[in-house]
Image (cartoon, rainbow, N blue to C red):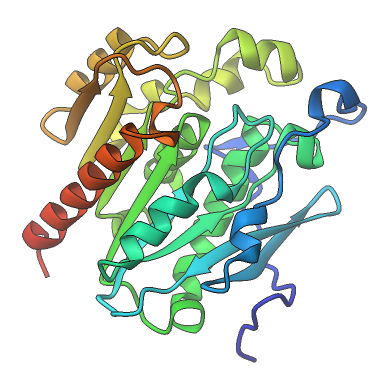
Length: 289
């Protein structure tokens, strides 16, 4: 039976996060004062007729979706977007403009919805499992979802979405199909005060295992990191060390007077969109057929 937009379709359930059990906490309630008003639904995307939604899984009685924007001119190129929000909240709306931008150049896009603390009591391990389930679902059903089998695939992530994007390179069975990553101020270490505070059920060993900087040997895919020099959450010095360890696969572009999340607003949005597309076009031109 062909897939249909808006109908629930359950994907292959990946129950491991980088080889560790992704167990949900049994009695952890979302504080209403914290989660009230936090965006967890992509309202902008849902209003945009250029997007269609598919359900790829369910977690904690919560449907998880992918949001598809097909480019008018089909180049058989796909960009998969993963939003940020510290695994606490956030939605695919974060990359609505970037997806629309790429569509004008013939690149189709899919944004992944995943478990977050405010949406369905999620945590970083659940989010990692969700994203990898979604990537497998996308690759298995690409022809039905997009109308073509993508010749080139890119994964784009911002902040905690950067950690989730990097997780695809570690254990996802489709990782060899990824031609490049674009990372906006990515989280490279999950063992941080935020996760200890909001996700105490995650053991130190699991937090470490979820951290990209612990898996450098698995990361040979070309990547572009776009990072603000004034980022107070993820210091530029840490990103320089991370990228240097991944040479020649990693390229870092630094932005002056830019803090965390700088790419969400102008003039940085336009500059980072152009850098993202230039990187993708370079990989498309030089990748072997």
